[in-house]
Structures are given as C-alpha cells and as structure tokens.
Amino acid sequence: MSRYRPADEKQLIEVVATAVANEEPLEIVAGGSKRTLGRPPQLPHTLDIAAFAGIRQYEPEELVLTVGAATPLSEIESALAAKRQMLAFEPADWRMLLGSAAANPTLGGVVACNLSGPRRIRQGAARDHVLGLAAVSGRGESFKAGGRVVKNVTGYDLCKLLAGSYGTLAVMTEISVKVLPAPEATRTVALAGLDDARAVAAMTHGLNAPHELSGAAHLPNADGRARTILRVEGPVPSVEARSQALRDELKPFGVAEILDDAESEKLWKGVRDAAPLVADERAIWRVSLAPTASTAFLGAVRAALDVDYFLDWGGGLVWLAVHGADDGGAAPIRAALGGQGHATLICASAALRAAVPVFEPLPPALAALSARIKDGFDPKRVLNRGRLYPEL
Image (cartoon, helix red, strand yellow):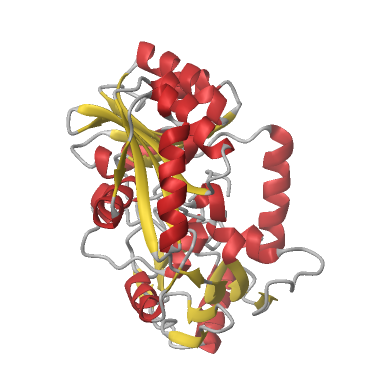
C-alpha cells in the first residue's frame, strides 16, 4: 500500500489524476479519528491530507473562520475560546467510542461526516454552518463553492452536498464556517425517574415552551437512575429567569432541579460524545427519526434485542448499544423503523460493517440519483470507494 502526502493543491491534483488514470482508489485520511466510520474501505492507497491544516483567516467581528480542512478541532476551539466564540453545531468527540484516542479530530472530518451534537435542535447541523470550501474532485479538478459570507449561494449548494458525503465526492482542502458567541451561562433543568414516554413528553413540552432550549436528552441509566435533561444557554440574567420558568413549566412531570455551569458542561459533553455507551465490544447505532415515534420504536427494539440506549434531540435521536445479535441488530432495528427514519451503524467490527448496510439502504430512485452525483464528481470511483455503499 502506498501513502501519498501532497504538500499543496498542485500535488494533490497530481495524485488524484494519477489515481484516475490507473483506476486505483484512494482512502482519504487527515486526523484519522473517524477512520472506522462507515463501511471498511479496503483500498490500495492512502491519501494523507495532513498538510492542508492551519487557520487561514479568522475575523471574530464578522463571525467567520477559514481553515485548512485538516486543522485539528482542538486548535480551532482554542482560537475561538480566546474570543469567547464557538462552533455552534457542537461537534462530537467520538475517539473513545471508536477506539481512536491517539488521533486528532479535524474540521474536514466533521464536515465530511456532517456530525452535530445536542445543540443541533437549535443551531442546525454542521452543513448549515459551512459558508464555503475549496476541494479537488475525483476527476482531479479543483473547485470552490460558496464564499465567506452567509448569503453567498446561487445555483447548487455544493457545500451541503459535500457535507455528509464521507469523502466520496471530493477532497476538501479549505473550509469557511460561521461561528457564534459562546454563551455566558448554561443551566440544565433535570427531572428524575421518568420512563421513556413521559421523558419524550417532557422534552416536547419544554421545546414547545418559549424558553429557547439548546438541548433536550433522556438518560435512562445515569448513575443508576433515569434523568431527563433540558439545557438553557445565553446571558446570565436571561438564563436564570428562563431556567426557573422552565422548571415551573415542567411541574406536571415531577420536581426538577437546576444544575449549574460546571455540572451542565460535564453532563452535555457526555451526551455529545455518547459517553453512556462507551464500554465493551458492542454494535452501536445512531438512529434518527421523528421524536414522537421514538417511544414506539424503542418498545419494538427492546422487545427484540438486549440493548442499552439514550435519547438526544428531544427524542429525535436514539443511541443504541446492542448485545449479542449476529447482525448487530440491523434487521430488528430497521424493521422497527419501518422506513420512517435512518439507522447508522457507528461502531462495530470491520467484518460486521462489511456484512450489513452501515447506512440506511437507499430506495431505487435515490440510489440512482446518488450514482449520478457520484458520476459527476468521481466517475472512476477513486475517492473513498465503498465507504457509504458498495457501489459508491
């Protein structure tokens, strides 16, 4: 296996063009922390883009940051924290979950996988914060999309297309994102002892109330008890008033306590990083569905499988750790979904990830559309071949 390390865009284009000419696929690697996400790509060559790193331009007053795609998140977050700003989509750190503790998560990896944390219910996904990018397609052609201002898109929004494509369409080299001020204060209103149905009802009630929540999760086994948590962020006086009003609003669901900044930070970091499921060798799934459907879905899954779980996004995201199922629980989980959601296998052995669909199977029309898009960007299938689906 060859490992290519281009130092600039010209060399990157040459590497991709050679791969196209020889029809030899490339596995794209930057920090390597998410290398086991998706199907296992057993490809002959590795394309290491670590040289495309560093903060290129940061304008705190304009809330815009431009970096090389391989820039570590730790470097970005440190620079933003110095100006009391943040990546509002709250990118997760799954290194403990994926067994990649020695690797460095990068912004390019986060955008390529479109990963967002608990704040997604208020601030949107990673793709919603990408203003522009530069990349090299699977044809060996460089291109730019978007720009450095919020209203910059005419025609096709290629930034959103590449976000979540897992590197199968193009190699991103530079990314511009919008950033936001970090909250002055954070409070968490926590209820104890609710079952799944009551927890979803409480989260729905809180999200529909005028308190501008930035997180709503249910942990059925947090230190031996069920906890339903709702997060309030912003200026100190506003947060104090809103959290107390929310506590009063939730009285029909039980007596709630209000957690301070330190407790809240620890708790929500755990939700963001899927800490409740970081344990042993299990198949771990991330299931997106309508919040109102999560209780029935969990009932069907728990009747068929031995699982640990928790809920995020007000019940719209279900994390599952499956014990002892030959297919990692793929068949019962997707049967319970009934096509009304998306189940992604996040963590499993390479053999299991090769044997079952890691991502939700595509209906024929959508599969054909995806293939046409792939043909447009990478007709020879040289970039991360097979990472999403065997044919892509």
